[in-house]
Length: 243
Image 1 (cartoon, rainbow, N blue to C red):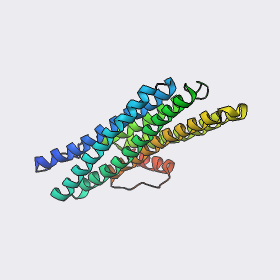
Image 2 (cartoon, rainbow, N blue to C red):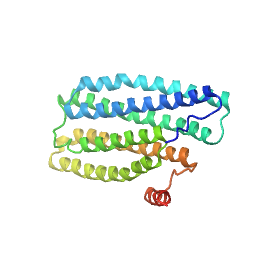
Image 3 (tube, helix red, strand yellow):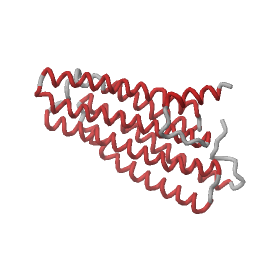
Image 4 (cartoon, helix red, strand yellow):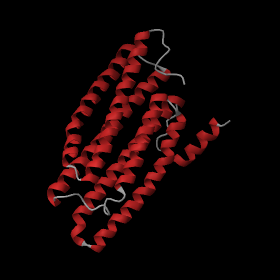
């Protein structure tokens, strides 16, 4: 696959573009690790792991600042056009989505700390039944969109849209499941509300992955697909690529 960050007459320009994209991918891997650890902390009732997630959030913030500076320098020094400009603009938007996904992971970690300190233990495995599956889907979407960004691969981006629909179905099932515990025992209301918060945070991480996939298509195709019906978009792009 052609690397869209290479092939310029000025090799230094290639290096700067590759470096900016590399920093974004590094940030993405860190956010993915945060999301996984936050969910694991909840499932295992591990406050120490939750606090590690909270402490590491600062590293994501610093990476965001470094990437913003790199992008600003690219625009100021190179005056990019065409696909280079699309890539740089897309990276800028991706950084925003990654930062927000990282915030969601941190919020889950804080939720773990509050739960353990208040209850003395994590909620029962029955209440947490859907956390693991929702976390797996959300993290898979995040990993897939990062792979799509690294390769400027439209098919991988479309996979993210496809499985994003599965995430919505899993969230609906999870919400219905946890609400049954409130009906059975009103003393569980506090725990259930915290679990609902976590479920929505994980779903939001998946939404940010979908936003990143949109930017991949913008880079590769020059087409802004935000706010479009994803099922129709998947069918249209895959049909066009199959010709």
